[in-house]
Length: 173
Length: 173
Image 1 (cartoon, chains in turn green, brown):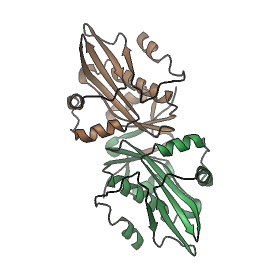
Image 2 (cartoon, chains in turn purple, brown):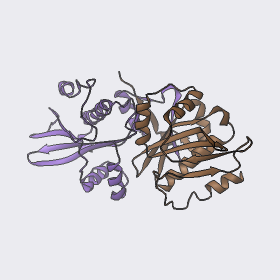
Image 3 (cartoon, one colour):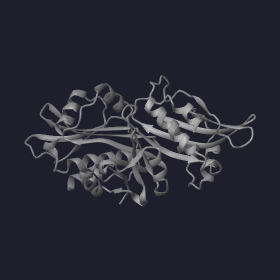
Image 4 (cartoon, chains in turn cyan, orange):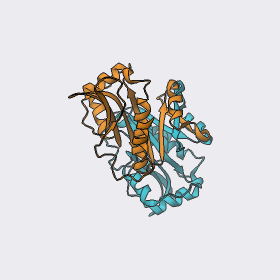
C-alpha cells in the first residue's frame, strides 16, 4: 500500500487547488501490465464516445451524449482515470460530483473498467475524489450506492443511513 | 385542495422557465391569518440574517453566512416561501437543490417556520420544487431525510432505498 501513502498523505493539508482546475496525478506502481501506468485527471475535456464505451463495458444504459456533456459541465468535480502505455492513453475509470461549493457534495457515475476492477483502482479513484472535495472545504460527502457496492463504499468510510437519515428518490405517481 | 390544483395542474406541461430565472407564484387561499397571503419565489437575493432567523426557529445549528451565501449562489434551484401582510413580507420557508443540470438533483435545507407547519405549506413548497426540477428535465430527484420526516417525504412520492439503493455519508476516520 506504499503508493497510496504517497498519494494520500497530504489529505488533511489545506489545498490551494480549485476543484475545477485541471490536474493530473500519477498512481505510482499501479500498473501490473508491462510498460503501463495509471493516472487521474480532473480535466473535463473527455471524449464522450470513449466515456460511453467505458459505461458500455460495465453494462450501463446509454444516455444522450448531449445530456452527459451538460452534466459534466455542471459537475463540481470530474475525475477520470487513465491507463498510459507509451503514447497511448485509455479511459479506464470515471466519477463526478455535484455540489453547492460550500457544504454538500454528491458523487455520481462511479465507473471502473472491468479489467481494472479488483486491483484497488476504484478505491484509489474514490480516495482521490474525497481528497479533492475535502480540499475544497466540503464537509458533507454523500452518494447513493447500489446494494452490491454498499460494502465497497463502507470500506472507504461511507456510512449507510447514519443516525437514521434515509436516502430517498422521487418517483412520479 | 382547489388551490393546489391551480398551482400544480401544469406539472407535466413543458416549462420554458429556467430554474435560475426568478419567479413568484402566489399560494391562493393559503392564509388562515387575516389579510395575509403566502407566495413562493425563486429569487436568490435573500437576506441571510432573515434566513438564519428562520433556521434558528426550527433549532438548526448556525452556519457561517459566508458559506450559506456561496451555497445559495451555487445551488441549481432556490425556493423561498413568504407571508405577505399589507406591505410587509416575512420569510416562512426555504429549500434549495444542487444539480448537474441534466440528470440528478438533490434537495437540501428544507425548512418551514413552526407557525406554518401542519398547514400543508411544507408539501406545497416541496411540490413547487419538484415541479420546477421536472420542468428542467431533471429525471432523478433525491434527498436525504431525517427519520422524523421520512413519512412526510413518502406522501410526496419519495421512496426510501428504492431497489436497495442506500444513501451514504462519508465520515473521516
